[in-house]
Length: 248
Image (cartoon, rainbow, N blue to C red):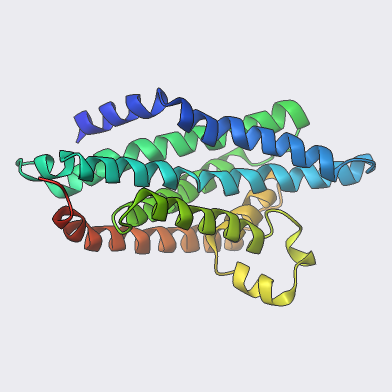
C-alpha cells in the first residue's frame, strides 16, 4: 500500500493540470468574484463578502478532485493495471487506500493554500485554526470518499466529469457558496441543508469568525462523516463490479 501511495502522490504533485484545477483556478475565481461583488461597497460590506467567498470557493473547488480520481481509476482499469494488481497477493483494500490517500493529502494541501491566500491577500479572519483544521480533515474525507465511490461506479471519464460538475456546481449553487444562503428561496434552502457543502461552508465561516458553537460543530462533523462513510461503503460494494470491467 505504501509503495502505491508514494508513487501516486509523486505523480499527482507533478501533474500541472491538477495544480491548475486545485490551486490556480480557485485563486483566479476568488480574485474575480471578490472584485465583482465588492466593487463600490464600504469596508464593512467588503469584509463580509470576502469572509463568505473565500471559504465558499474553498468548499466548491475541493470537489473538483473527483475528476482526477475518476480519470486515474478508469485509466488503470482500461490499461490493465487494476487487473494485474488484483491477480497479486495484495488485498483489494490496500489498492483502494493506496490510491485514495494521496488525494486526501492533495485536498488538504489545497485547503491550506487557499486559506493562506485569503489571509495574506485579503486578511480574512482565521480565529479558530484548530477548528478549521478539524473541518478540513472531515471535508477532505467526505469529498474523496464520494470521488472514490464515483470512480468505481461510472463507466467513462466523461460521465465522471459530468457528475462532478453537477455535484460541485449544483451543490455550490444550492448551498449558498455563490450568494448568501439566507437570500435564497426557501425550497433551495431546504435542499441545501442536505448537502455537505452547506454544512462545511457554514462551519468554516463560524470558525473563521471565532463564533463556533460546540454542538453545531459536532453536528457538522457528524454529517460530513456520515456522508463520507456512506460513500466509502458504496465504493467497497462497487469494487468487485469495477474489477469485472477491468482489461486483462
